[in-house]
Amino acid sequence: MKVVFSPEHARHEPQFFLVRGQPKPSAEQPERAERLHAAVSARGDQLLAPAGLGPGPRAAIHTPDYLRFLEEAWDAWQALGDSGGEIIANVHPARGHASYPRAIVGRAGWHMADTACPIGPGTFAAACAAADVAATGAELLLDGERQAYALCRPPGHHAYADMAGGFCFLNNAAIAAQQLRRAHQRVAILDVDVHHGNGTQGVFYERADVLTVSLHADPRDFYPFFWGHESERGAGAGLGYNLNLPLPIGTGDDDWLVALEQAFATIRAFAPGALVVALGLDAFEGDPLKALAITTPGFARIGGAIARLGLPTLLVQEGGYLAPELADNLVSFLEGFEGGR
Image (cartoon, rainbow, N blue to C red; front, side, top):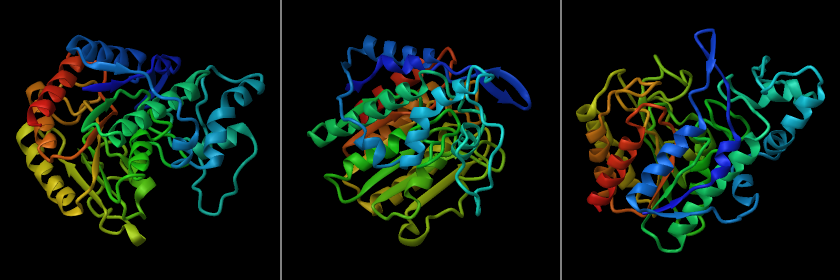
């Protein structure tokens, strides 16, 4: 397996995470990526640095205002003179007929969906590196590889075209899918993270060229709460090109795989030229943010099932937090995927 990875991820080291009104250390730590990197290194996978693809891939998904905000935010925050050690928005517009603000505090509220995406001095650089990792993974498929793994951090699937949220800043899976559109008329994204990929859904919600499918814990009871329901099927030209499969809290391997077959039926009918898998490992039964109950052997079954679709496939790392079995779960998935080929 060719694996794309950048050590630049470590420049993003968030501290703040609000849990039921209590400030706690963020679960999205650099150690996540280091454990996953060690796992693929031990497997003997071929490790590649991201190519210098410039700002084009991220600009193809994200708005100019948002990208400018991410680039300028830290310096503008520091210029306030009495600001905290991370950018955490404290005012959020309902959007509606709201006007775009000039002040950095207002811009933070406009572009940050929640408090789970604090911005520090190295956040933009790390997010750009993760986007480059995903885009480089897509380039590998465009060059003829049948599979590749983009070890992205920070993750991306909660990031909208103009808004961060849920640990995510740039939508790595969406960036990869857009790259793949250069060669494929249709591309599918399959999101297997425990959380709904609401940002990815939002990016492609009115498009018919990228199918978005997400299996996740039921948002009536779990983050992101407001998105990820079965009734969300796309809009306009994209109506029918978004499929959400919310699962009851505590769903284990067998029932999860039944839902995956439903996802496969839609993907096969769409007949994509390539597949992007938003690979969250946080559906694990022992994950710190757990809501589902996938076992370590269950990840091998999931990987094997996805591989049997027979599509050129890019795996893009999303969630999966600091459980002792984190690296084991990745290895299980990759071995199952390779065995399914």
